[in-house]
Image 1: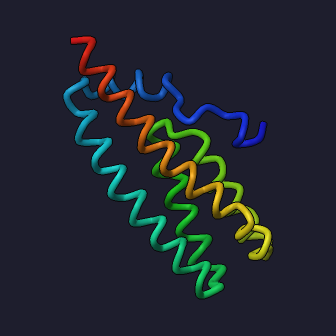
Image 2: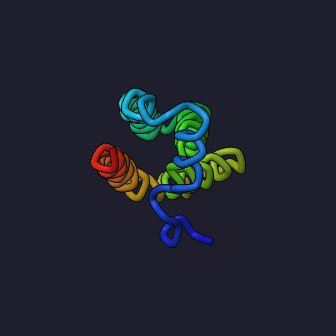
Length: 123
């Protein structure tokens, strides 16, 4: 399944987080994710400018892990795909996914904000 056909968020993961930690923790988790994912994107951007395969692999690995743990599915899978391309020595091919990754980051932040707003209106 390609990342373009995956949902932005996996609501099953988000519901499990709510069950495990409570709803009141989500705003903090989402804010932390927004900051951390933006930092990782800065690392990725710089690695692409520098054509640094190792740094790009590190950045997309970290972004993928952080995203998937929070249920940010499409972004996590795209980052994971880029990671595998880096590990295979295919830097130029990995870079072709960069703009899609940037768009997914923006969409993911919006989707988390919307999920948080909807959750707040359920109380």
